[in-house]
Length: 113
Image (cartoon, rainbow, N blue to C red):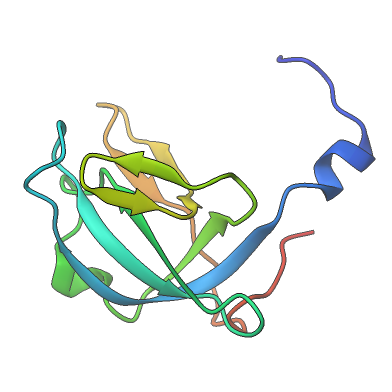
C-alpha cells in the first residue's frame, strides 16, 4: 500500500466525467497515442489531452464515450500538443491502458466523490 493521504488531500483532486467529442491519431507522440477533446460541461468546457489508448480503442470508438479525468493538474506539453487534463485508466495484463468510465451516463462535469 502506498502512502496514506487525508480526506482533505483527496478533496483537492478534481476528478470529473466528460464526453469525448473528437479523437484523432497523434503520430508525433513518442509512444502510440491519440489526441482527445473532451467536454466536461460548464464551467470547465472542452479540454484536450494525449492518451496512450491505441491498443484497445480506435478514434471512432472513443467519440461519444464518457471518460473520467483529473482536471486540476497543470497543463503539460507533449511534443507539439498541450495536454490540459489526465484521462484515467488502468493497465490490462499486458500493460495496455483500459479507460475508467461511469457504468451509466452521468452529466458532463460530474465530480467523483
